[in-house]
Every structure is written in structure tokens, then in C-alpha cells.
Amino acid sequence: MSAWAEARIRAGKRISLVPTMGFFHEGHLCLMRRAAQTADLVVVSLFVNPIQFGPGEDLDRYPRDMERDAGLAWKEGVAVLFAPAREAMYPELPQTRVTVAGLSEGLCGLTRPGHFDGVCTVVAKLFNIVKPATAVFGSKDYQQLAVIRKMTADLNWNIDIVAHPIVRDHNGLAMSSRNSYLSAEERRSALALVKAIDVARAMTGRGINDADRLLAELEIIIKMHDNVEIEYLTIVDSRNLQVQKNVDNQSLLAMAIRVGGTRLIDNAMLFEEAGEFQC
Ligand code: PAF
Image (cartoon, rainbow, N blue to C red; front, side, top):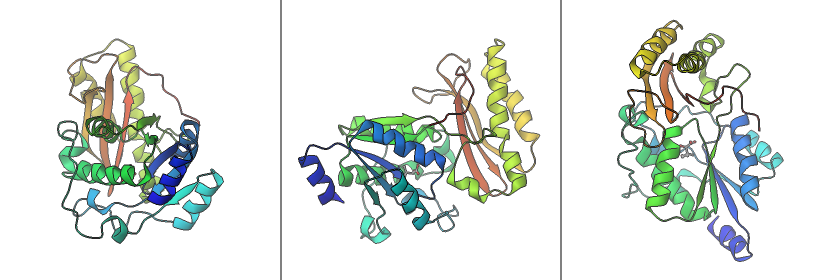
């Protein structure tokens, strides 16, 4: 992969990287299309990164379908689908971890200790191997995007981090490979996230800006759905992920819930127009 990338860069080409864990859905394909707009060649990495999963998480059952993924990437005109074996990425137990303090600590960082270190470490390796000029990440993992932007700036990589809006299905559910774990009934419950975003936007549209009052209402609405447990439900400043007491035009509603055994996340800027993103 490195040799391929170096030869292309010497020939004056710019590479865009789309890091993924595979099991592609429309959201991934949108990232690939966006990547193609930002560079000459698109490299998609497919690697289910063991060091970003905690004990008891879904590393072993994470959905995989390499052949289907390869076909989809091919159709999108991707130059390389880089799918290294685990032993190739981690020939030995890595003793180095990339930690972005601060931004990694709240939200998902609270319940997934070490998760962002695992993400940053593998993304740092991918940046060094693929040497992209741009890298495209989805905004569903908003915290991941913020953490990777900070890592890229702090470590002086000359890589343009491109954020892609959340891609939702016709019901508004954010696309995720983990949606494949949901039964039909659980899918209905997962729409609690969509409902919460709609209600939060409606309330802020009516001038309610007290975060606690908004969150209390959203909690009731989410809990009306079967089989749902809230892991976090919060309003943060989208620039620094600090919890807010009063909403303003930087406010981001961020949520993680469990539906049955499946952990789902979603987020939305409170003052943005609702609506599906089509790519
Ligand atoms: O968002 C993901 O799929 C993963 O966290 C990433 C960025 C590919 C790193 O393993």
C-alpha cells in the first residue's frame, strides 16, 4: 500500500482516504463519492480495528462481507480497497498509543475507555501508510471527527479532514453497520433517536433554550420506546464538546442509547434544518 501511494504521489496525484471497518452501506458509499471530489485517487481502508473495542464489545461479531464490500467499492471507482490482515497492522502488540486528551474524555469516552486511543492509533497508522491529502469521515461519530481533527492538527499532518453529513434512511435512522444487528421491532425503537432530534429542534424553535428542560423532555420521549436504555443524552458546544446549560447556534445534541444489545449513537446541530442528506 505504501509503495503504491508513494509512486502515485511522485506522479503528482493526490490521494483521498476513507477509513472504514467495512460492511458498507449507503453512508460509506457517500463518503467514497465525497472523497472522489477532493482528490485524484480514492483509497478505502477496511479494517476492523481490535484495539478500539473494549472487553465485552462486539469485535468478534462485527458484521463482515468483504466480497460484497469489494464489489461496491469497485462500482464507486475506488482505486484501492486496502484491507490489511490483523497481523499486518499489528505484527506485535503495539506499545504506542495516540491519545487526544480532553476531547476524548466525555460522551463515548466515558463508557468506552481507551476507544479513542484505539481509533487515533489506527488512523495515525493509516495516515502514515496511505499518505492522503484528504481523509473523509462521517459525522455520525461526531466526537471521533473532532478527535481526529485535533490529532491531525497537533501532529502536523498536512491532511484536509473532510466531514460528511450523516446519511439517514427514509425513516431518519442514521446509517450504521451496527443497524444490521437490529430486529424489526428494535429498528422501530431505534427511531427514538430521530424523534428526540425532531422534538429538540421543535422546542428550540419555540425559543426554549434551557438545556436541562430540553433534555428532561427528550428523556421522557426516548423512554417511551421499548427496550431502550439511555447511555448519554446531552447538549454540548460543537466546537469543544463541553456541556452547555443554554443552547445557542453551536449546540449539538449528542446521544448514545442501547436498543436490546445494540449500542447506537446519533447527533444533530439544534439549529440546523432537519432532513435527509442525499449524496
Ligand atoms: O469510524 C470507523 O469506522 C472507525 O472508527 C475508523 C475511523 C475506521 C477507525 O477504525
